[in-house]
Length: 229
Image 1 (cartoon, rainbow, N blue to C red):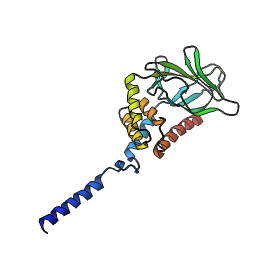
Image 2 (cartoon, rainbow, N blue to C red):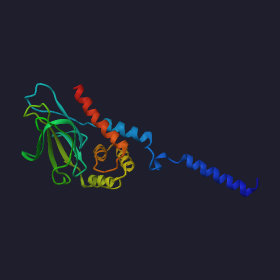
Image 3 (spheres, one colour):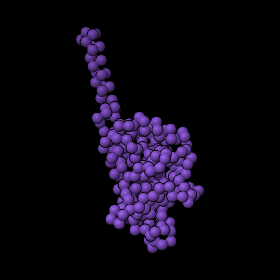
Image 4 (spheres, rainbow, N blue to C red):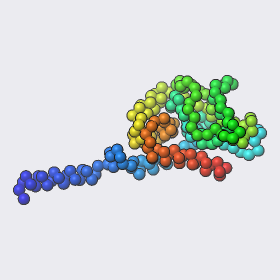
């Protein structure tokens, strides 16, 4: 074989090899790598999302499952969520009779369920954006709970830097579910639960089936916990 023919054959072989080794994730129409989805599932699966109902009138122990904002961590003043989204969606994993946002003794916003329909699912943030360091209380009274029995979570707005990191991740994810999964995976790998949860429930329109599956799994875990209680 002449030298030009040998060189051409080598080039074709290298091209074929590089195409075979190209990551599947580089193809916008392909599914994400299994390892990425496994990491995300494992990380989200251990994030605390349950808060106990306090009060003296209930005869049975109750808890509320809160999917967003999250995760719920123990704090000096009780269960606390560090909130990186200034306008977080309130995603409820438990049916509620009543929900309130409070500052101290003042009720800033409230919603009451009807006798036929519980408060559930996703609620848009009803107040002005949270300022860095601002603290509010999210109070939730589950379906069937007595009038004075509430599950209360402190919402602690994150620092300017944390809010900016979330905004930057959101900006590159709008309309791009695969990029949203990549940003979520990055948050999971550094152990940033609040950022990962915020990205999972971020108000971006991508119609990504993997993101939808992760959200359904989170909702199902709340239902399973409720049935096993």
